[in-house]
Length: 619
Image (tube, rainbow, N blue to C red; front, side, top):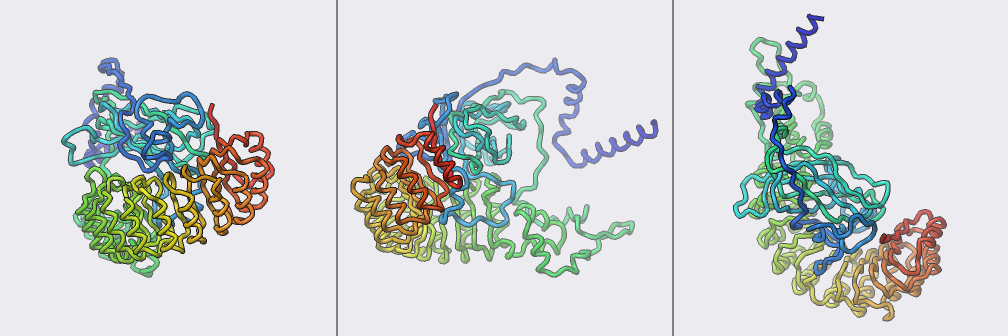
């Protein structure tokens, strides 16, 4: 037994020596932790826990509501609860724009990016500011309907109310999980066990993924609990390799050797310049192997040896580049390091990146000028560093660009969008929640006749949508999808011109377009003209009636998604005829349809099991 104890003691001593050499910051607390472990917890000072609700909603990627009201908007998360502990569909809650897998199945959905890490599941986010900075002890989210969408909670070192923000802004994960679906749609208080962090915070970020949910998730309030003084037992994270650390690290290699480098057995430990069996593999095979790595792993592998550095720096590995999963770490320096590798870049996703000064307009423009000549797809959702200069550089440097996503770039000034007229080959343009005005939109439609997918949802600064859709019908006859979500001033005349000029439309979102009335015959005309229609949203239009559904049943056999939430004039018989005539129908939302009760939904569900019939409720 004693020899075994001696061996364990030696092993423990070696481990301590190695940790000392690694320079771990946690060792500085070793003495204090040892005292605590010896039972001296009673000597620690008692700290008072602070409880506070969100003071302000700073940023978010999408919401169900309008920019001009409070119903279903993210701004409802500021302050005390409005609904909790009640369960149901309430306008006073915060609701994101999408749920489930329906939107991914639409023809308007963009192609996914290769090399997106499997651990990145986030689809939406929101950022909340609190009054006082604390060391978090708990975060509570009051979910009032279909909970389970939250997959990550992060804390920021920046105080959003300070006049002098620090140069170094850090984000730390308090909790993360997989996309899930709660067993019940009932309200709950979600309070996961969070990790301690080494700085106080009053800025939280919630990231969500509602792909597993049966309906829209609704959030009522967020509570941050914490202490003002730093807990003695706070853990310190080991230094992480940053995405910007892309240097070859010759000195490190000379000391320790890369994991795939061969070393000689001589006493002086001189390196063998060979690369082992990798020298015998075809170049294409190694390229295929490293193509399965995420971008940070690719950068780390390139530090192992010269051969792998050559493969990991090959521009063919960076034809597609999604930097969205690394939004918290991306900076101008990282873009500079990536620049020599991205000379063949064709698809770039920088959504959510660069906010709070991490990426500057100058740094972005420099990267685009160097790497944007071959770009065909550029996603910049929620990139608040963008300004008019950035859009001008993109539109001048990227003549082949076919897809541009500027959704929720709500800080871009209206005149900046006129530069998009230079992108004459653009086919997909996402302008959801932007400040684009009518003049700029008309100019874009005049010069960009190849548009196939156009999203103008919640663009509240367009004064006359009739003029816009009339030009769409005249110039963009090949349009496949059009999103006019919450475009309140579209009239029956504009809709008639649209469906007459764009007969190939497969997706049309007219949700919350309250100025359209079924009595004018506009919805029946829509059904007669759009024979390829696969998705139609008539959300919250109270006037949709049986005659409209009969035209859809007769002329739109390819219909897959239909939302008629809120209508009072559709009968169960009309719904049954529609379901019989549209065998491809998969989603039907009849929430708040006064003639369609829960029993009818249950009966239709049993007769048409392949259709997901939605009927929300209020408790």
